[in-house]
Image 1 (cartoon, rainbow, N blue to C red):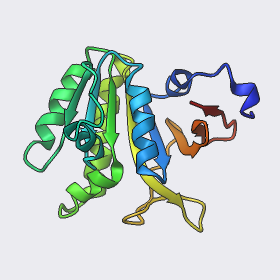
Image 2 (image 1 turned 180 degrees about the horizontal axis):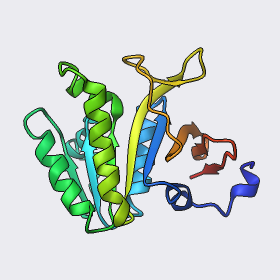
Image 3 (image 1 turned 135 degrees about the vertical axis):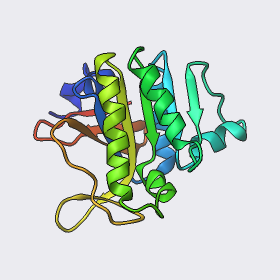
Image 4 (image 1 turned 90 degrees about the horizontal axis):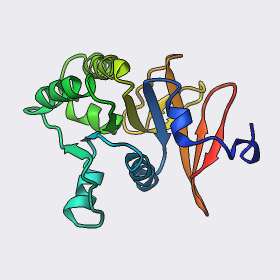
Length: 192
C-alpha cells in the first residue's frame, strides 16, 4: 500500500493490531518526536526512559510533560519496582507503556548474566499484563538491518526479537514530519 492509499489509516490503527509494538529508528531525535505525538493520544502513559533523552528534554524545559504521563528513569535499584507497579496499573487501566529504548535497557543490564533473556522476560510480562486492558507496549530500538536482513541493535549488534505477534514499525524523518512504515508483507506507510 502506498502513502496515498493509506491516508485514512491512523497511527492508532497500526498499534491496535498487536499489544506489543517495536519501533525501529536511526535518529534518536525523530524517535522522541514520534513518541511525543503518540503520548498525546493516550489518557495514561508509563514512560521508561532508559536512554534519558526524553527526561533530559523535560529537565531542560525544552518540552513540558503532559499530565497523563509517569516517567521512570530506571536504574538497577528501582527497575523491578517500576516494572511491578506498571504491571499492576496497566492490567486494570488502558495505558500506553513506552520502553525507550531497548539499547538503553541493554546498557542498564550489561553486567547481568543473561541480560537478553531478562529483558525479553520483562517485555513479555508487560505485554501480558497490558493485553486484557487493551493497553499497548511500544519498544524503541536504535537499529539497522544487517547483511542477513535481520534487525540488530546499533550499539551491541544483538538481534532484535522477531515474532508474528509484534507489530514492527520503522520511522524516518521527512521534510513534512515523520514517515511511519509497518514492516510486514502488507506494509502500510503513514506520514504524521
